[in-house]
Length: 120
Image (cartoon, rainbow, N blue to C red):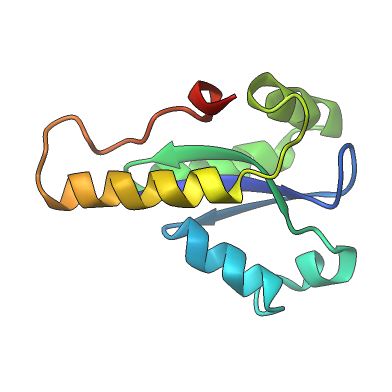
């Protein structure tokens, strides 16, 4: 499981886009100051948007695409699933663990977690 994620400093604040295969571990790294220097410098620690992918090349291509977008498009994308810019880390980490367990057990159709909009 791979994720493209958006971190924000606050609503309509600075936005950071990253990619990872373990969202919980990556968020912990950012909070501990071991993530990107950009995140450290601008205090961008609030997880506000996530897209899941089965393959790393898909996630990397999407991250590159999103980084080329202008700011208004990124904000619109965040607000499609998370209009209040709520901090999503708890929901996403729980969902990641469940999806990973299902995937490891070989359950068919369990390679992608539910969209975040189901939790709003």
